[in-house]
Length: 335
Image (tube, one colour):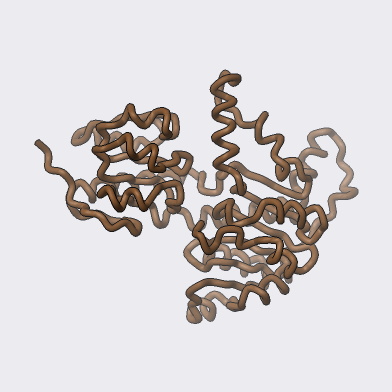
C-alpha cells in the first residue's frame, strides 16, 4: 500500500493485495476470491467486472461519488457499498477558486509568456472577482465552502439546490433563486451536484441560452453535468467567456482510450498524446486540470483513513457510510 500507508495496519487481520492498475474486465478475474475491494473512480465496477468476483461482500470506494459502481447489481447480489462522504470540502472549494483565479487573471497565458522571456502585460487584462455574482448549484458541504470563500472575495452569491436551507442562506449571506434567475444573473457558475439521471447535461444548449453573455463556468463535480457540444458552441460564440474544468464530459472514455493506446505504444502511463486532441483542451479560454481537485496531502490522508474505518466497521458488523444499496451486511465469520 505504497500510496496509502494507513492500509498496512490491516495486514495483521486481513490478507491484502495491492495493484497500481484500475480494476476492469481484463483483470477482475485475478481477484475472484476477494471479499472486499477498495477502488477509486477510475475503476469501472460494472456487471461484467463484478460477475468475476463471486466472493465480494463490500466495495469501499475511496471517493464520495459512486457512479462508477453498478449499484443495481450490488443490491441484487448482496454487495454493500461504502463511500467517503466527506474528506475535503475545503480542498475542492479551494480548487474552484484556483481555476477561477487562473481564468480571471489569465494565469496560464501569463506564465507561458514569462517563461518565454516576454514580460509585456499586453492582451492579458483580466477581471476582478469583487462585485461579481457567483452562482453555486448544489449547497452541500463543498458548495458551502465555495460560498464562504466567495464571500471573502466580496462576491454576491446566488444558489440553487433541490433542498434549500433558508437558515444556512441567512447565516452565510447568500440567496436561493430558481435556475432561470440564476442563469440570467450569474457572472460565474460553479457546479456541486452529483451525477444522477436528472442532473445529466443540466448545462445544455437551452441552459446556456438563458445565461448572460460572458459567463464563466467552473466544474469540479462530474463531467456529465455538462453537454460537451453545447459547451463548445457556447465557448466559441462567446456566450461562455471561459471554463475551468477539473472533470471532462467524456473523461472515462478518454482514460480508457488512453490506457489502450499506452498499453501498446507507451513505455509509461502518459495521457498527453491522446488528450491533446480533445477539443476542450485545445481551446485557449478553457483551463483543465486532471481530476485533481481532491489531491492534497491532507485530503488523501483523510480518504484513506475513512476508507480503512469503513472496512473495519463492516468486518465488525457495524457498517458505516453505506450508500443506498439494500443488502445484508453481516460479514462472514472467520474460519
